[in-house]
Length: 151
Image: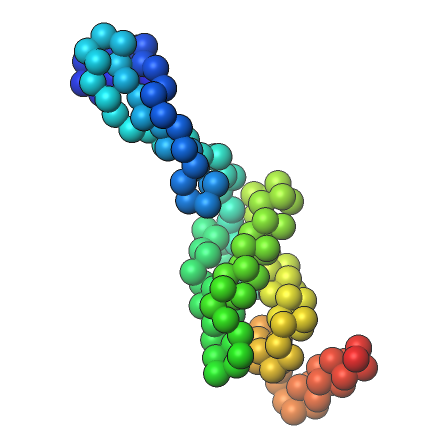
């Protein structure tokens, strides 16, 4: 690691500790030449993920969009924000483990619905109604019947 003060190429690690719930490591370094200390952060390089929408357009994956959709579905329901964030974390793990650069909104939507089905049925139906764009009451009832049949 190059020293930011004197540009010398040798430094030693004085202290290391995890940050961000183990997602990164903070390292205190000391320059061998000038003896000044500085901090670096080391974290896993993530593959940039692109979401392919229904109309074929592509946009960068946005965690907050996913979380906001789940929050909207769980509004006024007994689902904690920690539970909602865990759903997003679980989905992100699956997405990044696929090792694909592109993922469809259909795949993400199905993952969310599978998670919500086990957490809160009302939130599941709310999310499904927006995600599946129910055209009329019959398609809505069909989804409810599927849910009841699974019980």
